[in-house]
Structures are given as structure tokens and as C-alpha cells.
Image (cartoon, rainbow, N blue to C red; front, side, top):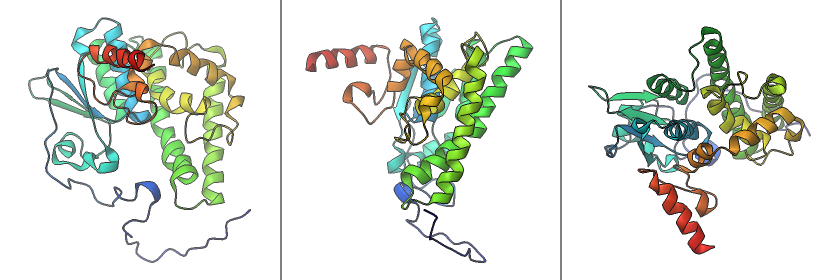
Length: 290
């Protein structure tokens, strides 16, 4: 059925507070802080402020993978940022990330604490800092960046585009849903074709490109994003599903997906992470209640 809604844009747009669906209470057309509150700082040099959204888990997956490879300096504190409550607009968060989006990392191992915001930037920063998951060979390094930036440019069409109009908009409109559904399926096809003869995104090497793409497109392929699996016929993307299953099975990925998670089964949530033993405590709690 075609849309029956019609709207003529005014000459000058003005903001209608509260118009925007599920996240209307935190969306606004201006940047900057809304309240004063410092960010907490734990005992590790790496301080992460985040939430386990697809963008948020990119950083925690990489940190857990670095720790699994024996990099003790990758120990980190992960603090929960409740975006529904506007934590990202505190003075401390805005100082760390003027764009007020999660995740943000602050590295206190440098002479002056180094802020790193935007999930792709965090992945590159940590990969270069620890010399892992980013090839040094120029051709493979370029291919990793190709796919990393493909994800950064493509995912807004999946999330803010399809996800918003399909799952969060106050009304369902056919045109934007059709438009973004078509684009998401095109992107899934791009990835599926690439993975047809590759174990990982760039070939036989696991990189930050996989860690960036997996939380969005792996979740979509498994029908875990926006309850849209059947709608988008994600079963068609066999190569993406095979790749996603491979990553979901990694212990570091399992841990990374738990950190700063505030929904789902209680056993899948670790609201804050300050020590590796936090996961063991969670496992013990799960056993005790089963």
C-alpha cells in the first residue's frame, strides 16, 4: 500500500520537541553539554565509556581480543553510558567526545590523556598501539581500511535509515522503509559476495575490519537486528551467516558483546567491566541460579 501521508516542507525548518519516535527525548538540533558531571576514572590506563550497541561492542571486542593475545596493557575499565537518560550530554562526556556519541576511549598512558572518539578511530588507535589486527603489508593494510571505512559509511543507512523507519519511527511509511530495505539488502549482497571465497573480510586474516562489520551485518544476517530477519530474507546471505557464526564462537567476541550490555538475559549483561574476573563472577552467578 502506498503512503497516504503528504507534507510540504516549510521555508525554514523549526524543531518540534518530542517529534522523533523512540529517541525523541534525547534528540535535539544542537550540540554541547546539558548538565555538569565528570566521567569516572578507574585504575587502568584505558578508560572506555560506552553501551553495547553495534558501535559500542566494536571496541570491547577488540580490547578482549587484545587481552586474549596476552597484551596486559590492554586491561581497561568500561563504564556504562545510558544514552536513553542523556549520559552522553554530560560535561565530562562532551569534553571526551564533542559529538556526544558512544563509544569514546580515553588513554591515560600518554603524557596528556588522549581522547579517541568514533568507533572506527578507536579500532585503528588500539590496533596501532598494540600492533595487532591491522596488517603491516601495504596491500592488506589498504584492504583492511577499504572494508573498515565501507562499514563506517554504510552502517548509517542500516541503522539510522532502515532501523529508524522500520523499528523506531512513530509511524510506518512505505517509501523510506522500501528505500532503506533495498539499500541494506544491496549492502548485504556486497558483503556476501566478498566472503564467498574468503574466511574473513580481507582474506585469511582476522582484522579490525571484521570487528567493525560483524556487530552490524553479522547481527543482521543472524536475524538479531530490529527483528527484521524474515522481512529482509537474511537467510539468503549464506556466506555472511557462515562468517558471523565463526565470529560468534570466539570467546573474546562473547565477552566483548557482554560488556556494557543493559538488556536481554541477565546472564548476557555485564553493565561495567573493570577486571577480567568480572566475567568469572558473572559465570558463577549464572551457575548458582540455574
